[in-house]
Image: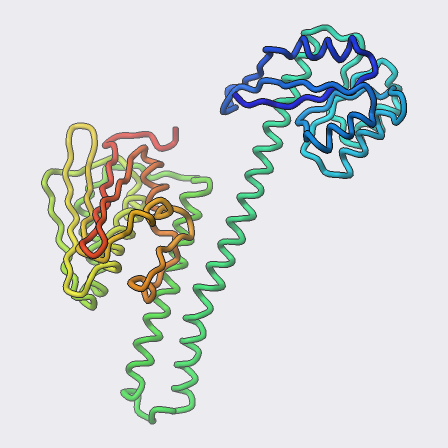
Amino acid sequence: MAVLKVLVIDDEPGIRSGVSRILNNFNVNYPFMDEDYTFEVTEAPTGEEGITIIDSNKPDIVLLDNKLPGIQGVEVLEYIRNRKYDTVVAMITSYASLDVAVKAHRFGATDFIPKPFTPQELKSSIENIAKQLYLKRITNKLNEEGRKIRYQFLSVLSHELKAPLNAVEGYLRMMQERQSGNRIDDYETPIERSLQRIQGMRNLIMDLLDFTKIRFERKEEKIEEVNLADIASGAIVTVQPYAIQMEVTVNLIVKSDAVIMADPTDMEIIFNNLVSNSVKYNKTGGKAQIILESNEHEVMIAFTDTGIGIKDSDRESLFDEFTRIKNEKTRNISGSGLGLSIVKKVVELYKGSIEIDSKPDIGTTFTVRLPKNTNILT
């Protein structure tokens, strides 16, 4: 259970003790909440003492009387607002005029509890306040994650696109100035390198598009029977030019039919990423295999390579967004750091699993398990 800290600021001892007694062993739960809320109550008889507790204890909820000795409740409320504390305030007072109510609302009060109140009235208000607090914090968290993702997108784009753009521009200026001669054959290498850089930028853009498709709302699903052997063959064809360049042999082994209900595009995302990685992180002259098999309920796909492998210390962050394993062996391998996070999101969307077995300098196997039938919209 999660504990919400409640501060009662009221000059009447009976009110303070009554709140403590009512909220003792009281808990709040809604179906959308991850866990129950319980309450820890602290008391203050004056606004000055309340402010001291607010500064030191950062309560989640303040139940605040307006008519206090010394500074008034609305002044405490204004103090909380000016310091931008993550605190929900409810006024508990029998002296609340319309003017005070308007002022309290303007300073951030979310509820009013009239004196005298019954235990059920207080519990009802606390339930509503706890719900508001939960939803507010979830919203703030989502907004913060959104800002973080936007910042990461911009960082990746600026970093990953700047270098290839500069390189392509340099090659074009070399040709424009005829630095290597006047024949087109004199520029075969710059042209080839420019095309490689452009392909790298295209791959990054496709990764970002896949990432947004999986991470954010999916408006349309095209669920149909998908033969994963066909998807695997298509992925091999796509990666074949790079495999030839790397002198990596890619084989498909179908041990049994592997047909599932899925969106073909989602399956292509899984296969294209993992087959590409099995070549990209392989050794010159290495081997890569895709092994398909199934049982009554699920299909199993193993993507195996004889490549550089992954250290145990790097596995924990392997599926994180925008994460790339950086060492001497991967220094010259381009990538967005999104591929595996995208794969994991797709696999989880289909209520499947992905596991990794890897040994440095020996190779890596990613094993994906997918149910043959699942409703990805539930």
